[in-house]
Length: 289
Ligand SMILES: Nc1ncnc2c1ncn2[C@@H]1O[C@H](COP(=O)(O)OP(=O)(O)OP(=O)(O)O)[C@@H](O)[C@H]1O
Ligand SMILES: [Mg+2]
Image (cartoon, rainbow, N blue to C red; front, side, top):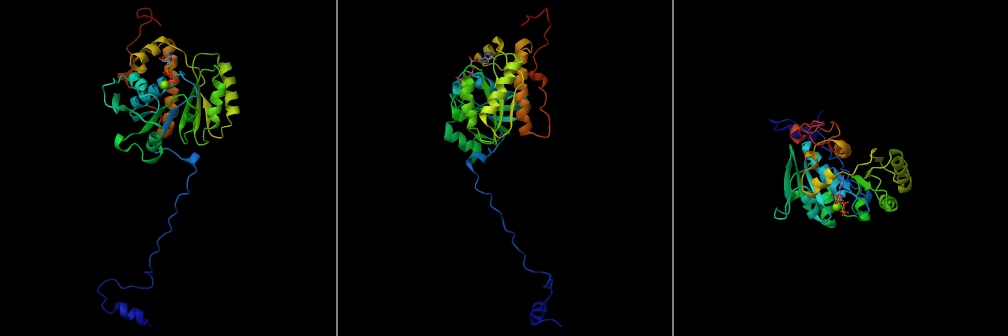
């Protein structure tokens, strides 16, 4: 026998009658994410930071070359300079008269350079994202030689050192590096590999870093070709790949591979397109390095 309620509901029933199976729908309880602790934050986009608590250890050179290499791999890269922007712009062949937010095409991708001071950089990296600056696949950050360059959470931190009294300062910087940041140590200037291996192990132990920590196995050689290219705003990726320049580029290629692994984890870094490749070098006929 139906209840009073059922009789009432089915009286004018041209539509579906409500039965006990159409119980009110429950609104699932939504879980708010916990308040993130400062050092567990992650940037809005995959981010590589090049930082060392020392001046002149090729930070701008490495960050610009890395940004370009990722662009050649097809990415639109935001190159965020928290240091004097002029230096970085010059390396990419951007002149002072070009707009403040300057974009250069590199193969299928691009590098957009913008200079932002600390809090503005944090806004773009962790809060609002690039917003008006455009749509990007990844961010590369060039920093001035100060300890706080190493304290950004959730990034890939490339930390170059020249070994010359740098280790003590570098260790102080790395001790402040959040655990969710992956560190890659880079030795600039050639030293015997076993020496570098030893130094890298010492820096690792002393840094007390709880997160991922690796080092580029081969020290990067000094090369006049790279220095001259940088000073003339010419991409290092257009240089003939030979001698120490090739070794240097191998190093940056390896760093780009690590960065790519965070940006497009399911694929390998695409090889440089032929447009970026240097002309054929004929040993004995062309000038040898
Ligand atoms: N592979 C290389 N071989 C020779 N010279 C290089 C190489 N890479 C960079 N340099 C030169 O070393 C100098 C310092 O490089 P760079 O400006 O990139 O260092 P930095 O760490 O950014 O310096 P700063 O701390 O002043 O920002 C520059 O004159 C640059 O041309
Ligand atoms: Mg610099």
